[in-house]
Amino acid sequence: MLGKLFKQEWRSISKLLLVLHGFILIFAILSRIFFEASGGFDVATSAGAGKIVSVIAALLIFFTVLILFCAAMFTSVYIGYRFYKNVFTEQGYLTNTLPVTPTQIIVSKGLTGLLWTVIDLIVLAAALLIMFATGEFMSVLLPAFGRFFQYLSALPAFCWIFLIMLLLSPFLTILHLYFCVAVGSLVPNHKILGAIGVYIISYVAIQILSTFVLALSGIGFGVANIDTTGMTGAEATYYLGNLLTPMFLIILLCEIIATLVCFFVTKYIMTKKLNLE
Image (cartoon, rainbow, N blue to C red; front, top):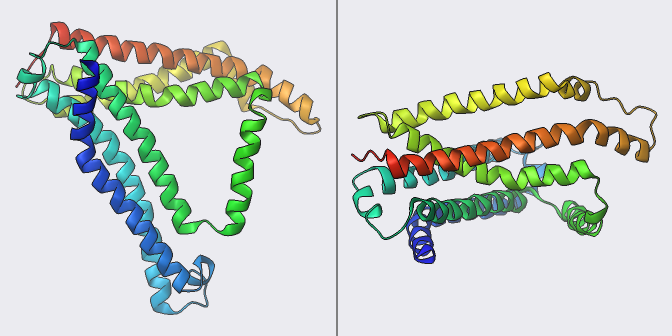
């Protein structure tokens, strides 16, 4: 049943997001064509370019930043809205009568949201490369990726912990959205406003708690005074490892705890406190 839920959610959420991200790629391609026709990005944005070319180039850069930012925000918001719409509105009467558990609903929607979060990042990065990357830049970037994977096993411990933090971050982001929607659904007649309020309060609380834990442990003060001047590469790595490893471990632990809290609170509300419109 989990597979069926995932397929249905994938089809439903992808209809709009495919159009949005397809538009981003088309915009990037058309922008690149303009820059190439104008002699390249550097020429189009230089002081010697014609006035019309300069204005169009500036507008393209402005709209690129705006579109990419809005696309990233919209993808996250839409993932949360889909969860709200399917579970906590009149559609929830159908969703919650299916022979599935709240855990299966959260996991199926969470996996779909996670995939689209990854796709969103890939498309936004691809759009930037299409618009601005040069042959020289790509000749440096591609070998750098190769060297990264080649020396992956030789990375120090704090780098591995940081990579795990990065991989866990999308899970926390999505479950945090679901948590806010679920808690916000308990506010009568103002569920969306309630979700927004819960998001702001919980986000600030997480930042304050993380800062407090780091300050209490004394690690934050040590990291603030990092100085590797005069050290060899090995000495700098050892020094950074001693400072960053405990800090990253604490942050990772906070992320894990926050992820579990968001999941189980969401599940509890869906099971015991479901409030449909």
